[in-house]
Length: 329
Image 1 (cartoon, helix red, strand yellow):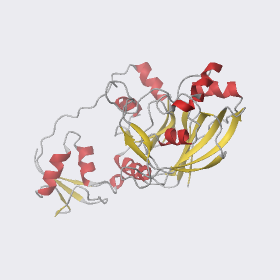
Image 2 (cartoon, rainbow, N blue to C red):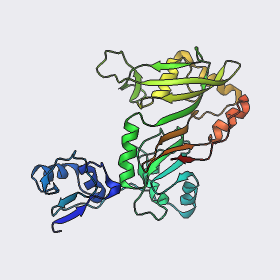
Image 3 (cartoon, rainbow, N blue to C red):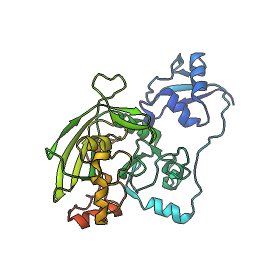
Image 4 (cartoon, rainbow, N blue to C red):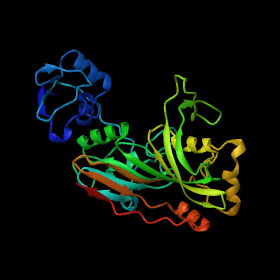
C-alpha cells in the first residue's frame, strides 16, 4: 500500500482521529495508530496530530503505507427468516439512525459463552446502506425496549457523545415488588462495581468512596396493585451499569424477576410469582428523546414485550400503545 490522502467528509465531523482510522481500516490496532501518530507518519493538513484530535470536514489526512489484519467480526450466520425477524424489530429508520425494539434475552454484544448477539447480526439491518449499523449504547440482555443504532460513522460519533452526556431523555418502565414511599422522587446514590459470589455486580457506594460514581434516577409511580406490586416510570439522569436495578432495590421495591439484585429481605419480588406472573425481568426502555444528528429532535417509543403485557393484563395496568416515532424540526 502506498501513501494516500483522504478528505474528511461532512458526515465525519468531530470524529477522533483514531476512531476515523479504525472505521476506515477496521483491522488496524489502536497501538499501531498511536505509533504512526507519534512518529509523524499520520498527518492532518500536513501537521502532526495525536490520536485524540477531532476532525473537521474538508481536512486532508495523510495515510502512510500500513498493513492491516482482516477484520474479525463475531457474526452468527443468519438464515433469511432470522434476518426478517430481526428487521421486524425496527421501529424507526432514516439515513442516519435506526431504532429497534430489543426483545428479552438477546444480548447486545458478545462475551463469555455468548455466541448469538445483536452486534453479530447487524448486517441484516444494513438495508443496502454503505455502512454497517453501529451500536452507540447498550441495554442489558434481559432489558427490553428502544435501542438506537447509527447508520453512518458521523452519526455514530454524534450519538455516542450524546449518550456520554445528559442530552438524551431516557424513560423506562418497570414492574416492582411493593410500592415506593414516597410514590415519586429522586434517588441520588453513588454506585460502584464489585466482585462477589454472583459475579461482578453494581453496589451502593459511600459518597466519599473513590471507587463510587454519582448515580441519579427520577422515579414516579404510575399505578399499583393492592400496594403489593407497582408500575414505575424511571428516568436515569446518569448512565451507570445496572443503575435502575440497584436504585429500585434501594427503594425496597426490587424489579420483578431480578434475581441478580433482589436482597434476601426483599423476596416479595418472587412471592409475586405465586400468582402466576412471568418470571422474566420486568424492565423496559420505553422512550428516547434526543437531538437528531441532522438537526431537530427525535422521539421513539417501544411497545411492551409479551411477558410485561401479560403482567399488565393480570394486574389491571393500562399502558397506552407506543406513539409513532417522530422528528421535530
